[in-house]
Length: 552
Image (cartoon, rainbow, N blue to C red; front, side, top):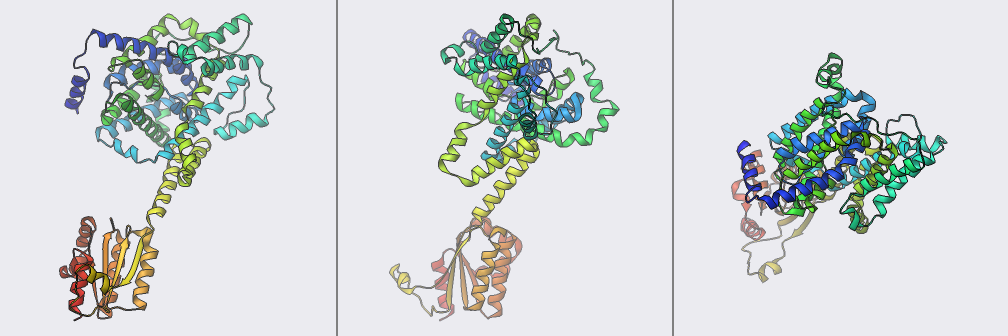
């Protein structure tokens, strides 16, 4: 692993020069400008505070960026992660989030060490799209309090939270609505020629702060930003391992698996997107190792779990970033901002950050993927997407992914379980036209052409075929299995039952065109020996000729 990472670095920095350094520096500053308001917003949205989000972004930029499996990955707090963490914060508090972060980091690290990252790719695309949209709903609904300037009761999920807001009869505060609206308008309406130079979120926040000063608005702000990477909770390491926290360890295992799954999925998806943009392939296992190490370390500084961020990584690529130094420079930029501009950052209205998060939530939906499913009317994909989205908003990520994957698996099994079995007697005219002349009788031969997997999903069809053959016994039955790619115990039982029934009637069972994987399974079950090696043929023609000779 160490050798592989060193090779990764050698390849990445081959031919590196002053021009490359300048590109990395400019890209890092650009990404830092984009990441700064998001880090503050996601820190608050995670159930911690803006300072925790800032510390997370800085440490992730340094640590995860340095060890990453690709030169373009930018990590930090994300909307998807904050949607999961806000629920955990309500249940287990900030020390619970820290411990969950460490546990999740260990899990992600082990996934990378044992090279199990490809397991994540087994999650169907509609499920990933569904929980992304579900997370967007959680973020959107979670920011309505700050945007509207109201305080609604805590709720277990986004659906109940929205119900509380709708049914509570709350009167919106026009000041916070104005402040958040300015940011939303700036992010949506500013031309790309402007936002390419300065992020729309930063312009929006600056305009919102000017409005607060001009109109002398009084509304909640971020508050003090400590000028240190060690937050007020400097005893985080002791808190993590206190008896009170460790007592809750069993309760935190499932949430930690949720965070680990999300972190791994989001990081690998980010690598796939940025890899397509650059043409450079990511080492997925090394990326997971870096994410694991980062998430083990960050909680000890009072930060929240981090993962690779698609938007920030894409900005880095688009800005000309060449190597992982882009991530490090973006962290340096935010560190300088935290030390030099902490008083200014502390005066940013919470409503302005809610505007940033609401626009982020709307944009994080995979709209092109959703439109594609709708346009092609893929009912099964739409069902998996919708169910996962609603489950994410109403339940939690782990349950949502399990539900989505289970539904996708059931749809897939139902689709592939339709094995086609065609029973036919031997057509002498067709054989003779192909130059095959039978030497004996052919009325005693019946051929069953099978197409599809012979597994438990097709058990009912296999059973009915066996019954049909028994009602009208034929001395020799040939199973043509060229179209059978795989088999499980149900398929074995069908062949064994058919072989026994043929033997009971004094007949024989012949098999032809058996695929290598299926033949291997038959050999392991000893059915090959029971049926007889001499009764296996390369093609149906050979089997029919042999059967005809037996009946001569």
